[in-house]
Length: 174
Image 1 (cartoon, rainbow, N blue to C red):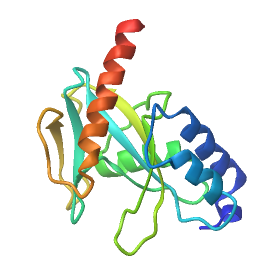
Image 2: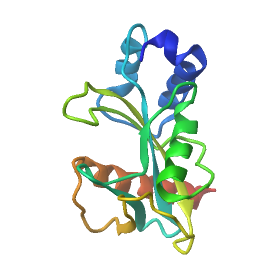
Image 3: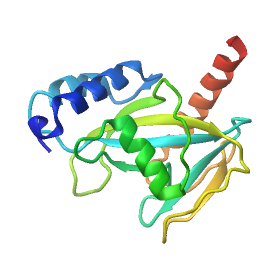
């Protein structure tokens, strides 16, 4: 996708959310500043859905990526936040409010044959009894943050733990 196809509104939303993200990985903000000047791959967005105790996260079992947060490609005309909410609904059936500050911004490749792109991670907190509906072929499960899981992105566990700790500190101050 090229910048003029992504559209000014979408690119501006990505820059704003990248700047507001609680955590930055892979020098993502700098990458976005450079990549936003020319042709760029589609953006990605995901949601880290935590339980109210901040001890578990809701993951989707992708056919070859393993256990990953609900998410995917930001579609034409969507902001990353809108794409994250849509992907969350498509993969889990959940329609929940995303927290104001994005959890993280990173640069990664989502497929061995694709170049790297910007990924924004948003967060939500829900009760574990909230019902969800898995997308066919992609089971959904709560995973404990004090245990590991199989994923092609092993760094996600640490990043989600760090964000859960940040959320706990934020809660204690507000």
